[in-house]
Length: 105
Ligand SMILES: [Zn+2]
Image 1 (cartoon, protein in one colour):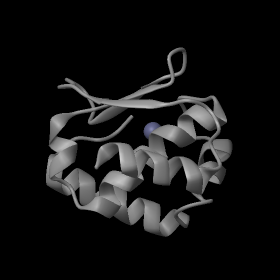
Image 2 (cartoon, protein in one colour):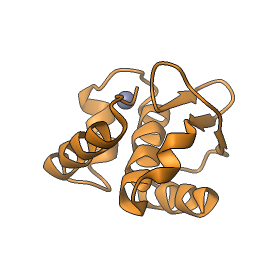
Image 3 (cartoon, protein in one colour):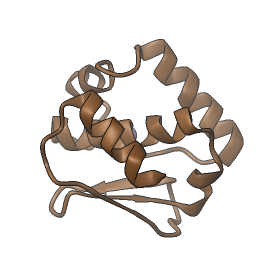
Image 4 (cartoon, protein in one colour):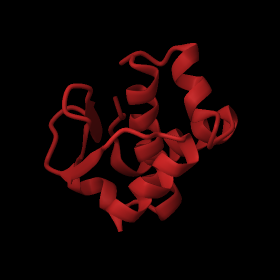
């Protein structure tokens, strides 16, 4: 399911790069992305989220990759905005945070 959601997220963002997603326990956040390897790592807890929330997590990390920044800059939000309007994105982040008690990076 994760791979399908990743493909969906890539299509929605128009991301051409080869990206892999793997599940591994993370200490400080629920997801992270490696710019060097194009790998998104998600904490196992992410799999407990609703499909739309998981899609958001993947879009969020892909947006970092596409905007080539670890910051939540305007370039980052421009990428996210191709899929989720900013208020919807904030709503999903709040919901994810409420469920998992951790932020994403
Ligand atoms: Zn982020």
